[in-house]
Image (cartoon, rainbow, N blue to C red):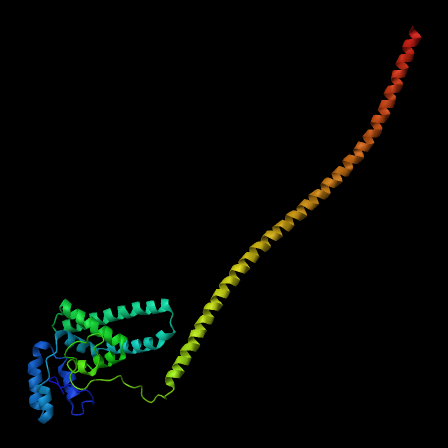
Length: 287
């Protein structure tokens, strides 16, 4: 046990954890009076532990306020689901997930500052940074999430400093562990992984089906355009064949007219020759 009543194990059976959680959300200016009053009400070892509870830093107090807010509980549940899913994600999805987590951490840090403002305390820039680092640890690490969710911080967390020795100076009372899922079979993790694999295959199949649908739509559009063009060309070919038939008939009639005119020309030539002979004969008689 340390000066702030932290233990490396156990669950605070003497009630200290519950008292610490109540006191560590009292506004900093009222903390000492509230702590001493609760210590006076308790007896024996519990009273001594309460009296030894350290005043939290402003940043740790603000995080404790957030730990009791529904938005933080919902964020923890979401972060757990995201951690379970991230093994199945590609680089692009992981980048998107990282961006969402950063936005979530920023939103929670703002919520913590708002809760502090509501209690009449304005967080400094340094305190806000501490809050954000601690919230980020809680979102990305299940053990840190359990510690923050207990609402008994006296100092904020440092990334990577989550061993028992480091936490005894940062957490009042027992050191929270990652809660086990109740009444779950031992192979539940394998079942969840199998479901995620099935879901991943379903998403991939959906993407393939969507792409195949787009390819089909483009092919059908091209086929429709080609069919329309072929129909227009067939219509034009029919028109040209009809025109050709008419021209052929006109050509045959013209050939027939030429043949008739050949006979006329031949007869005219013969008549001309005969007339010329008569002219010559007349000339001969006149001499």
